Image (cartoon, rainbow, N blue to C red; front, side, top):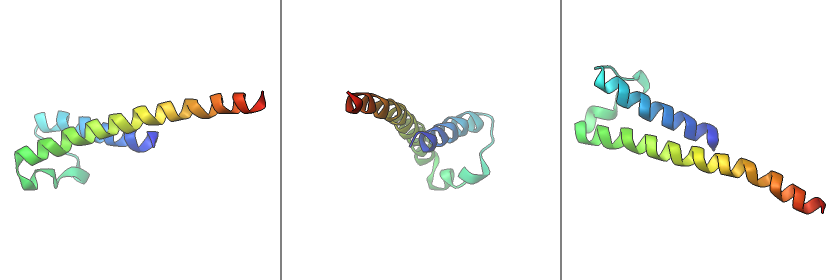
Length: 73
């Protein structure tokens, strides 16, 4: 989940920066086909969902270590 979140965050933030420079990722060239407002909503949504998945993935990585310590006691 962490890697998917990282990719979504990278593409979301990268798309925002590239849009200001007049460029776009080839993979995400379809974003503005529904209009600029929808394009911005998709870019921001990708960044927010990606950050959330990355954060949850980081928290989930720490939990198994704690559970295994409790199980050995």
